[in-house]
Length: 90
Image 1 (tube, rainbow, N blue to C red):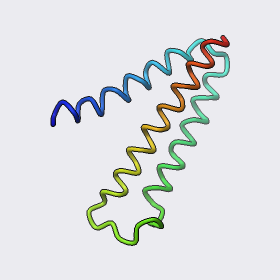
Image 2 (cartoon, rainbow, N blue to C red; image 1 turned 30 degrees about the vertical axis):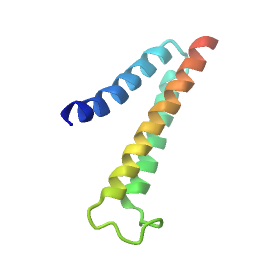
Image 3 (cartoon, rainbow, N blue to C red; image 1 turned 90 degrees about the horizontal axis):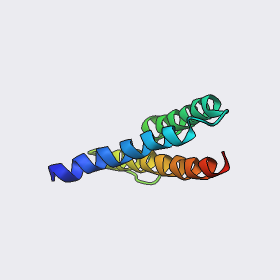
Image 4 (spheres, rainbow, N blue to C red; image 1 turned 120 degrees about the vertical axis):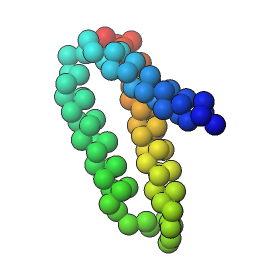
């Protein structure tokens, strides 16, 4: 179980770091990073602060935790795919 949790933390972190490395030579990297950070923080705040419209009750907060994890993982994967595409262009 500990290995699974460790992999759940290490794999997205490694993907995020490699995305930054792949995009580091791009001339618009700073703007991309800033806009990406704003987008990530905005939908994370919507998930945390917003009401649960899909589930009427979430007594333990597991639905919110799952949505946060999916949000972060999907964001990292989308940025990684974008980094691979931009790396081929640059």
